[in-house]
Amino acid sequence: MKVVVLTGAGISAESGVPTFRDADGLWEGHRVEDVATPEAYDAQPFVVHRFYDARRKALAAVEPNAAHHALARLEEALGDDLLVVTQNIDDLHERAGSSRVLHMHGELLSAVCRSCRGRSRWERDLVDLPPCPRCGTPDLRPDVVWFGEIPYEMDRIYLALEAADLFVSIGTSGAVYPAAGFVQQAAAYGARTLELNLQTSEVTTLFDETRQGLAGELVPAWVDEVLVRR
Ligand SMILES: [Zn+2]
Image 1 (cartoon, protein in one colour):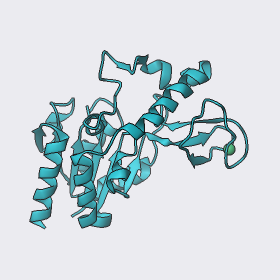
Image 2: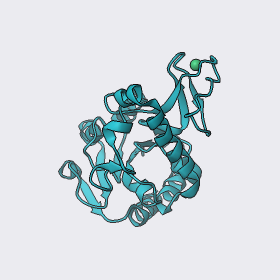
Image 3: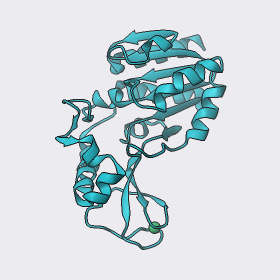
């Protein structure tokens, strides 16, 4: 059985990672358009750098939760038959033990060079304009997909959706495309579809089955079901 799992802000929120939908469309006091667009970066690079530098540092204060750990357990059993596609830019899946993870919106722990386009693992600040490890140019930006930019790995994601027997969406609002369209893509190629979310999402009606509740409770229970059935 081939399984594709999509995870969104909801699964990280239960670990204490703030999301921009938390409070009136603000993301830790910033409007999205001031920190998550290429235009914002061109206009105020230091504001954007300080925002992501702070978020990168804040990763040290959060831990993977039961949902992340359950998905790592599922990967142990399914191996290459499981792919986790995440909209999240934190590293909680990896720290829980998952290795087959695609970060379609990029990663806080990565920097991309605007000069050579190279991507480098990055754990320090960017606000002091360090040189690119690959080409030496001090033109690194957060390796995060901003609004108006094309997400990563779309070819691999669509191939996996076409091959999937089961598509599971966890903690996503269903408001951000292209991820919001994955359920229809998977269903069109014959996958069963399951949504695990705190509340109904904008695409709930498109799923074969929906369960509402905390990811930290729903995901371990669902993983147990899958493992028993095998
Ligand atoms: Zn470079």
